[in-house]
Image (cartoon, rainbow, N blue to C red):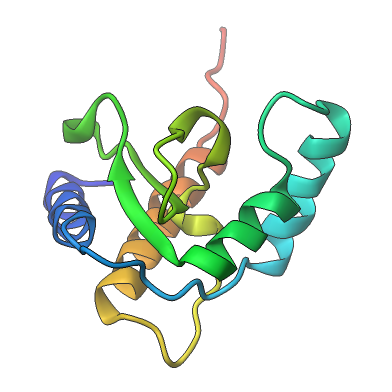
Length: 128
């Protein structure tokens, strides 16, 4: 992500993190849900199971929070009443984009997806 997009991403996250009530949970992207469930099965008990996180997000709404290194764009989505980034968090790119969602959240998800896809498609270094 170039510096300008990173600054926009951080700015969106800052604005969303100031919400005093939970944002409506739009659901998870189907592909993300499948990947998260596979991790749940491969590493049971390491974090809160995905279905429990989803149930809390549906009941409480969601909030956007920064991780330990906010300037790097380290942003997470949590159930509104949770403070447990280690166990209850999802990345913004896991969220589904729906018509009736907050525009700032939509932009945050799209920027996070662009950032995530950049890391996934980065070619491996050539050792030669």
